[in-house]
Image (cartoon, rainbow, N blue to C red; front, side, top):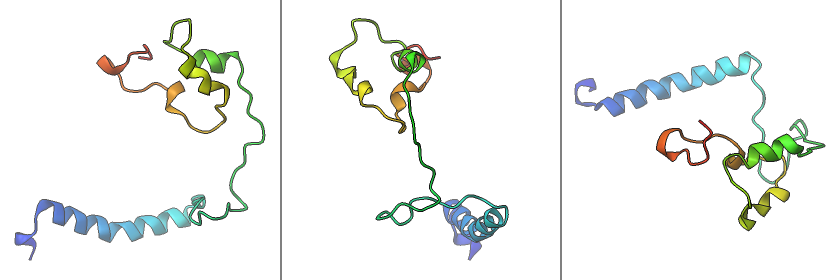
Amino acid sequence: MLRSMSCFGLAMLVWLSAAPVAAQEAAQAGAPDIVGIESSQRPENAPVITTFSKDGQWYLDSLHGVSEPYPYSLRFLEDQGAWFTPFNKPGMPGPYDIRGWH
């Protein structure tokens, strides 16, 4: 059977046999619970952000590589909360780095 199995099939077989072992090891190591499995309710032990202040450095980081006058389309930063946004993080290097993060 293994002779006729493709490399992908063999890799999948190895992965499927190792996944339960890895999950059990993570559970025994005290890995944190996964939050959000039941999408209709927030788990009691889920972390909560109580305050989020955008100081001057936050705005400098968010507007890095954008020259004044800032375009009106960046007004969304006023409503940006503590959730993740890729806009204020470095992206891909090289020719794609149009804001000069790298």
